[in-house]
Image: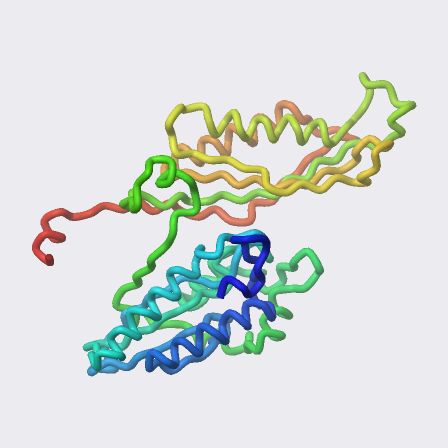
Length: 329
């Protein structure tokens, strides 16, 4: 699997709804079939393998993750959850064990969200929670999600056929790998998840005034890139204001126009990713950042800004009920 879209020694690039993801689906589907599952790709672009249970009318036990990646994703991110779920079913199949309820292994479509700037498409889709305008979102090449889904073989007029009715999923289990260095630094092989951060995504556009770098005096410049630099520093300052807090803030992409060494930047577009398991703090920091922008980047006819919020997802706190856990052991 790691050879499909391989970058460098350990990286992968498998954008959602592309030929590379389909190649990943094909090999994963072959392993699902070897494990006794029937496979299909639904109209949201999810790959689903199903092992029937003794009672096929019971709500399904669903396991899995995703096979799409970031533009330089880790080879285990998402993949481990899909392949380990397949291995669970294969172990049951090889030992002749029939589960009581059906088991479905799923690779969710566009879980990462980098191609169309909004993720969790397949998982939200099967629950009927897509939002207006999602199919019109376009990638960097101008391809809309609608067109990408059609090219992938999906029928966007039949989304309802691929939705799961309330109560039809018994539970969902996902094995996932840490995407950071914390366990490695602590020299620990495994950790207990205490919370999943809720991400907030912005795209910010700053508009200044272009001019020749040799003839426009510094005091009267309207340099959009200088404004962006101040905001980028502010993202870091705001996210780190409480030492030890799990808040993280990142500016991961930046575009400068006209991108000439001897022209003052007229327009800058950049992204902001702000995450925290404490939603009240994250929302407070979002307001602080917005206030900072409005204070230091006042709107004038030649110096304006606007931003677009792409997604604002809730955090999830994880708690282990010790009594119930002990009684099930």
